[in-house]
Image 1 (cartoon, helix red, strand yellow):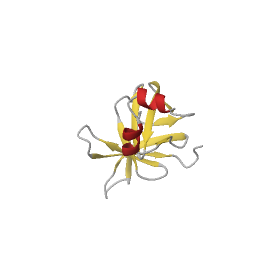
Image 2 (image 1 turned 90 degrees about the vertical axis):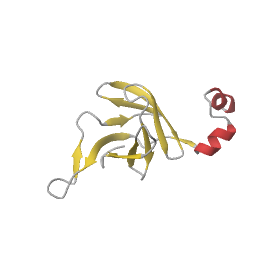
Image 3 (image 1 turned 30 degrees about the vertical axis):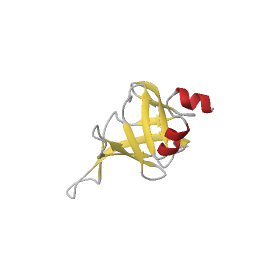
Image 4 (image 1 turned 120 degrees about the horizontal axis):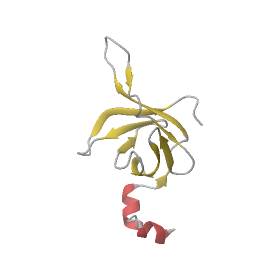
Length: 115
């Protein structure tokens, strides 16, 4: 396992700094933006949701891919969401991290009926 982590750039020093490897709970994640006082609390973003499948795989309407979770950071490394990053901010909620590394407004939440 150590050789594998070193090969993908997560040797012992790097993996300790980033946190332990983990996976997300399986199920369907719905992505949305906060609403406003005059309307609904959340505005669902059509076509932006995804399903976490077995191990570190996900699926969207556009296809399947792989993600890497270290500590609370989730990075989509292959597939239609490649390059997107999120922070896990609760057991079932992810917050999008923008290109500048700052928390964005988009939240993706695992549905209550999910795995």
